[in-house]
Image (cartoon, rainbow, N blue to C red; front, side):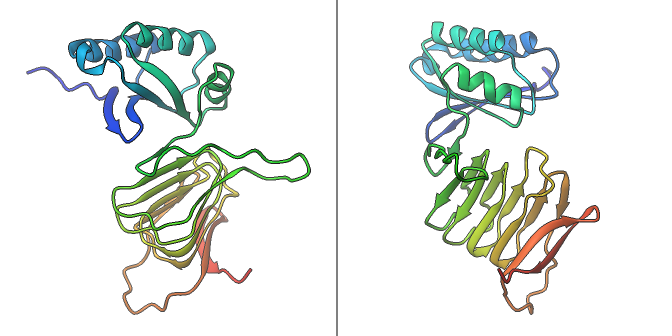
Length: 228
């Protein structure tokens, strides 16, 4: 029996293909070889595809990413975006003219620029409910005008603000920012993470919904009244 190789993965998303390379998977060249071997098994199927790359926290250097883009281009594929929590990788991708944020299941959104007069992270605003199966990834903050249903997921480098009911999985401060927060008009997520901290909501059906904000204090996540 051939062992399953989980260090690389290819899956379809609304924008094309998402290529994933395990951040802890080992040597970059070896992982690229495994990825290309998987593509070459069905080369005709992948020809013409637009691909985004997810490398997690792995720092990828300019010559490494440019080489991978060229190798994919020779196979008729276009590498247009790179998703990573590594500052090195994000800078590399931007310098090569690639997108560095990706929203799967909701469509691609560009990251707005912030004027020099204002401080803070650029945010994505979504003005509808996120239903089960939807995944939002953004390097800044994410604001939802609507609910986040069970089975939906938000991963943000900054804060997460939900003007509605939060029932899905959320991860704020995904790049390690322990000052990030999550707030909602009804805060009852399936799972909530801030940086490296994680918690789940108590299963109390008798609780009265109220605006709350979750943040890290004294090494753990706490929820308190969100009163502005």
